[in-house]
Structures are given as structure tokens and as C-alpha cells.
Image (cartoon, rainbow over all chains, first blue to last red; front, side, top):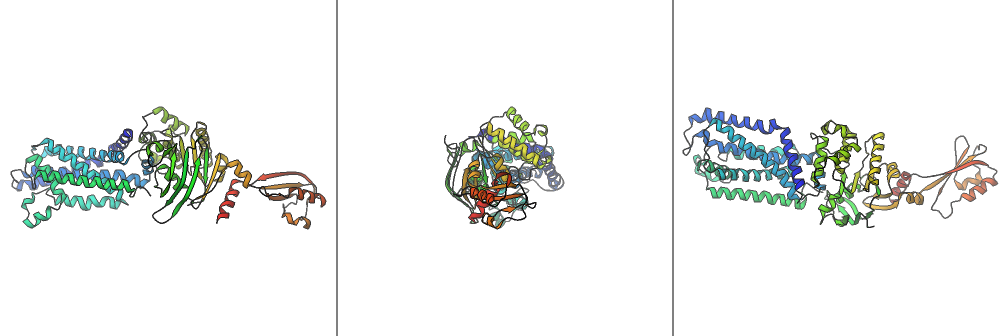
Length: 253
Length: 308
């Protein structure tokens, strides 16, 4: 195991975050604060409690999840796409490092960054609404599992993407809509039965629901199902990455 | 001593159907400077790419220091430093950061003293805190060399190291390369500049259309394949070459004072004695004579041209 390589990649990626502090940390915090102001304070006061939880507090897990998903994907995808774009990937491919070490370095850094951001946003939320975390262990577990899964997904996208447009495609046109439709701002129980069934095909539902359960013990789907689905996405992403390195897809000719 | 790099039956066919390498066999000796010459698209970069792990071979095998590049990729890659052809650098990292990063990537413990030594040798020390994006092209090229040397490799690949580099920097680089060779590093360079191979290399390999056409000691190559030119400085100027001497296909200089005879050193009879006899018979005297060897470039063009 080339631990020094993992550390070099990890430190390189974290340094990149440090250089772009404004866009990586400040911007998401401001965006989330705006959601709280609009949905929590302005509109939320006119909405009755949802399943015994005040609306402003109800949306916190969903908002944290929204940021966690988009940031995990964009950090990890950019991290591996940029060396491909500039050509510096030659160094990674010619170094005595295994696929596992490369992934741990890049995905580990993306995970760290998005998890830290999620925790900062959670703390920010504490300023606007009363927070209660019923199961801190499970809250953290869902946070880390989701960060890992979507950072892996981001890594796959970063390798698949041929240009900046494709790089933006998945976060903007797939993950954001799925998150909004995945019960971030509402409980899916308010939907007509037919739409509830459709919604169950949206993977984000399971993530938001499980995460919200760890806060308020209210969930759209059973927590065990949420956990199993998260594990399933994780396995799918790992398999995809395994295939990429085995075949050299878009990495080697 | 066993070769440091051993390539056998190596072939590569790209997905496009392009056959970049055809059954290449090649051995690189420990501690030598080996120049790989060939026109564009000959397969030079593909060959280097395979040895370094960037390109997947279609067939054949390569060992570096006795380690198979696929099964023992960690051991083989740890021995190699690669300077790519393109100026592919990071942009926002500093020179120091990017060189230290490479050292870590190759699994070596941090060693500021070594990084400092490399940066000083390449005249980059003053710019160690500069972001790479602010450097000139020549400086970036040196950064790439510094990165390749960061982990103290035993084999250094230089893919067109002096392409687009000004004369002064080119000479600096040659010095660095010679110093490296003196310290025991094996160097393989690809180049378009024949003068570079002629000046630097111990051995020369010529590759064309995916095949190694020849591998030879540089001196031997030039001796064996070279055409020589015999120049005679005449005592009295001539108006034209006498018809009796026509079979020698001599050329006369504009001022009529020099006669040039081109002959092949490989030929059984060079024809020099005959020429000198015939000159005396024709009453043409000469004050001096000298011979010149054809340059590697002429040899190269000749070789590649003959294969077409």
C-alpha cells in the first residue's frame, strides 16, 4: 500500500479547496441560508407542522442532503476531471499507485470536504430553527455513507465527462431535480398515491428519509430500507469504478 | 550486466485500428543515454507510454530492472521518471508543491534537501514559490523535468525534451542530462533533432512505422552507414571536370578550386586510389585533401527513405 501517495493526493485536493474557499464553503452556506430565510421564515410560518415537526426544522435534513449530494458530486468529479483535462493525469497513471489508492485519495478528499460543509450548514441551520438530533450516530452514519456514495459517483462522472458541459450535466440536470422531488421540502405522504409510487423510484427519497429519521424519527420509508438502498448505491458506484480501472476506460489507451 | 529495460515482442494496436507498434524488441543498457529517433507517428511516444504504464500494450512484455511492468508495476514504475512531450503542468500550485507532490505520489518520504537540489540544478530554486501558471514555457519544461527527478529515478524518459526550447536552455538541459548520466541514471530520449542524438547519445535506435529499424552504437552507426566526402583542394583552378574523370561523378566548386568525391564506406572498393591515380594521370595536382563523415541526419533520412 502506497500510503504516501494517498496522502499526497488527499493533501493536493484539500489544498485546492483551501484556495477556493469562497466558492467551496461560503457560497453553499449563503445559498442554504437563503433557503431558510425563504422557506423557513417567510413561507414556513404559514405552513402547519409536518408530522409534528415545525416546517423550518423539517426541511433542515433535506437541505443538508441537497448540499451534500451536489457538493460530493461536483468536488469529486472536478478533482479527477481536471487532471484529465490538463493532461497531468499522465503522472497518476505512471506512478506506482493502485486504483484503490487513487480512489481513496480523491474520493476521501471530496468526502471530507462535503461532510465538513454539511456540518457547517447544519450549524448554520441552528441559528434559524430549533434543531433536535434524535440519533446522532445514525445521523453521522447516513452523512458519511451518502458522502462516500456520491463522491464515488462524482469520480465516475469526472472520468466519463468529455468536457465541462458534461461535468455540469449530472449535478444540475439530475441530482438537483431528484433532490427537490425527493422530499427535501415536503413529506411524500402529501402526494397523491400514484405520485407516491412514482417517487419511490427516486433514489434520493431514501437518503432524505433516512437522514430525516435520524433527526426527528419521522420517515417516508422504513429506515432499514433507506440504509439498504444507500448501501446498494454505494455498491453500484464501487462496481463502476472497479470496471473503469480494470478496462482503463477513458484513462488509458 | 543484464539490461535495465528489456522489451520483447511488444505490439500495440489502438482502438482506431492504428498499429502503432509491431513486435518491437529492444534492450536498454544500464547507465547509457539511448536516443530513439523517428519521424512523427513512428511509435516513439507509444513505446514510452507502455513502459511507463500510460498505454496498455496489445501484446508482448516489458521488464524494468527485472520487474514486469504489469505484474510488478509498483517496483518497475518506482524506478522510472517520465518527462512528457506536452507541457502538461498544474496551474495554481507552486513549483515546490508540484515537485513535492510527485515525490509523495511515488511513495518516497518527504526530502526537502533532495527537492532543493533538483530545483537548484534546473535553475528553478528562485521560482520555487511561483505558481506554475506564471512561468514561461521553458521554465515549465524544467518543472516537468524536476517532477520526473523528484523521486530519484534510475531511469529517465525524456519525450522530445527540447522541442520548442531555445538554444541556450537546450544546452543547459544537455548539461543536466549528462550530469544525470554521470550519476548513473539511464536516459532514454526521443527526439526530432538529430543533432541532439548525435551530441548526446551513446546508442541510437531508429523507429519507423512501429518497427525498430536499427539499434547501433552511435559511433558505429555513423562509421558503418555513413557516406564520406573527400574534398581535394586543387593547386590550380579547373574550368570543368575532365571527361575522363566522369565515372567518379565529381562535383567542382564554383571557384574551380575544390573537387568533391562522395563515396560509401561500406563499399568493397571506395575508388579513392583509382581517383588519385587518374587525377595524377590527368595532370591535376592538389595541395590538400580532407574527408567528412555524413551527419546522423543524413543517415536517418537515408534509412527511413529506403524503407518507404
